[in-house]
Length: 413
Image (spheres, rainbow, N blue to C red):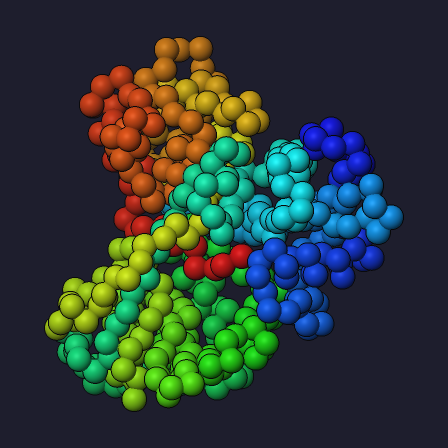
């Protein structure tokens, strides 16, 4: 189909076919600075996770080779909202525009095509992991989950909690990993807002742990199992012989599992440093006898979110306090904002279109950022990006949207 949004008539927009995939793989390897295009097994993994009809392509028809100059796609994912309910989420990914064809409306054309599809399918939210922080707010996305990058010094600190009488953590065999780890992840996902579920197609490449998908200096994944969680890490050794461990995941359903898994991680033999990403509210530092053993080396937006259907999305989550506001939402990209009565009682919300005078105003990107509890409404009010009619209303918003646990996606896509 022809694109009405792109600025050159010879740019065409279509959905993927089998014949397009070699070009897709080559184009994205170039766009995302991969050393080489994906190998056959990795291509098969990717295609198992995405349907051709969920991939948007832009080609330049002015040349006889019709080069591929734009790619975008989405995964059909599930995301846990506050309260523990999983909802569908369109996971926008692999978005790229060839450097030879910038400033021609290609990105907007692709995003518009996907929004048209999501809205026709009544998707409640879209999500993404952003390679750059300035691209997606114009489309209504806002950062919703964050993570701290940390460096931990094993051996120096000890857990304050006493050592359990029986060993609760063990190194897992490949057979145990395949059976147990996905089940533990499902249990964990239900406890964390923003957590993304993993289908069998998602687990296949994770469990395969192919050498082509990790750094040459990295080992395969080592898994630690607990009855209520697991942890995985790699050992890194550079050309100079320096050794470190890279934390892949710590999935803990209970506080005891978190303590016992970390007790082992900080006791790994011959590992002078351990690096990885943890939730911003992770209790690790206060569990240790030396909190300085955990150094935050970075803080980043882990996942961005865009509410597509305001009543459906707001009605899907639970809330920590009662609320009565009239919320005016501006949505300049899609025009799906408006004025809504938001009433919360005993954690459940009723959202209806309203003609009343607004008591809260914000852009759709702001509403999307506060949706999972990752940023308080008062932070956006302080930045001049959210307006309320009174300090009382703002405090009520903060209480209602607050969550016991900080949102954490846990899956990169």
